[in-house]
Length: 289
View (tube, rainbow, N blue to C red):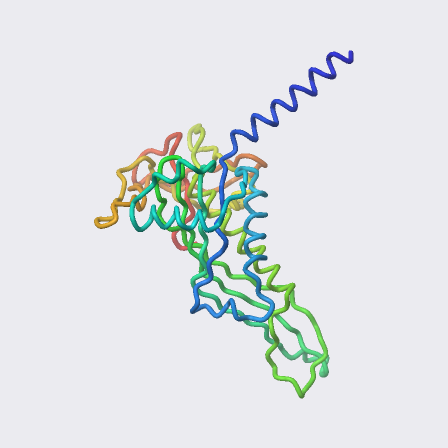
């Protein structure tokens, strides 16, 4: 009996090690905040907290393994690949992808609103809008993926506080607000990168019913309409830098989600105006979403 238990334990350890080895290794460059955003000057804001929340969100996907690397070295290697087309230094890295997030614009507000039933108190709400861009460099091939836009529209839980007429009716962002905002930004960013690197695909079809390669973690609730595109098109190459900006994708049709499970989703074909939806077709959100 003890031999069976030892064998089972070793099998579990081997399986976990094999799964960890299969996880793509990523290195995340510290978040760059453009000077024009004013975010770095906001009291209580910390780019380190935003970076930590981004790392935590990538870890929560159960897809990537984060490895530590020298930030300055990563930035220099990314700069060589983007601006000079040089990828030879990538061989020195033990990573599969380099992730470089940038905050391009930010709007922060924490305003108070009257509560008719409570004359001496106000409701305070924090809101933030972030426009981010993420560069992803495939360190195994030297391919630079097209920039990934990430828009974050966050609202905090409203709080009620006593109103002091001697104070302005404008409240500063609290540290807790920044943490909550950073957590939402990290989740949105990790989801966007995951969709770009490993896009959701059709994995099976039976009549008008299709199965998708991701489940509830993809953020597609029942009733969501999605575009279905053909993959593997011709690369789109920048005429000057010669970097690959993306690939041609042809719209095949539309599906609607009918069921979500932990690791897969089920949908129904709505139309196939652009071609036949088959296994391997790529699924993306509607443009308007």
